[in-house]
Length: 342
Ligand code: NAD
Ligand code: LMR
Image (cartoon, rainbow, N blue to C red; front, side):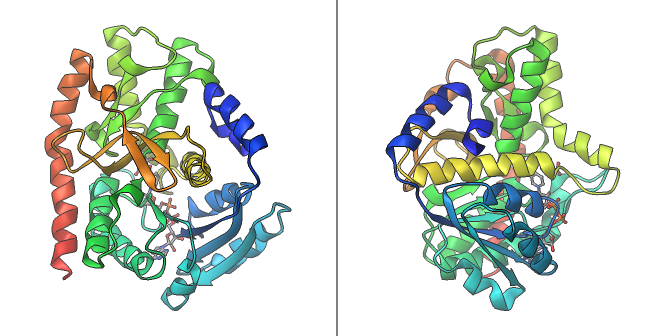
């Protein structure tokens, strides 16, 4: 059921075939920050996945009740709760995928970078524990500012001698989910068919939807391009303002993160047709980290799609050049923070 919900139609048909041909698999997933606004609905959505055998829920507080609640759902995975740093190692041992939405969210008037001072340390400590306890796991970083927290995670893993760039993912799926929704609405397309790649990073102008690469192909006026691009770039802020101090996107984020988890599990399970946009170490541009469509396989990122950055419209080409200085600075800030820790 989850596959039917998350996958575009063309991909879904293949998945259904694969599903029939392959035995049911069992993967262990750990969710760090599981009692939070994203953590709770995300835990529920992961509990619905038939590919998960064990779901480990970790937080610094309030996770027992979440785990007790979710564990009553009659889906296959076994739920276990872990509270506080002393229980983190046990939470992580033997895990295949670690999802990290731990950290503080924005309030109106803040940028994602304003969260750096608190969230950088949280991601550093959690990734350090991942390096010690499940160094081969796929790591999904949701905590903001993603443009910096992913480079922090990479540096920490390097310091521990276990960095595998193919397995470290910044979760930018929400940008794709939003782009698909807004484009389908604007162009009156069937939502299930629409796929818009979003590249760059995950903050403000670093979020670059490639409307010229929309599938099925659609034509946009200059006004539509400007309006849709700006809306997709500011969609996080749209939610922050609507919540008026009560946090940022949690439900759509949980939906997007669950899609990315499900894609990762399908890739681990041998599905050869898994493509997602993600913010990863990358050679596609002169920046060391960049979000783009990647093919995910059993060992993580298997391939980039260089043609995604070819044949861009003039608007996109300009926006790509314009985002580079900000993204570069965010990456360097993350790297400098992590290197100061040694
Ligand atoms: P929240 O405050 O509701 O929940 C965060 C949870 O993290 C809390 O339960 C808290 O106890 C926990 N936490 C704090 N420190 C921790 C630690 N050291 N170890 C484990 N858990 C810890 O916030 P939220 O709305 O769930 O957002 C979480 C993060 O996700 C924020 O940084 C937010 O900006 C980010 N976010 C990212 C995206 C994206 O697209 N990547 C989208 C939405 C939100
Ligand atoms: C989002 O895009 O919704 C998240 O990055 C949260 C935020 O602060 O906007």
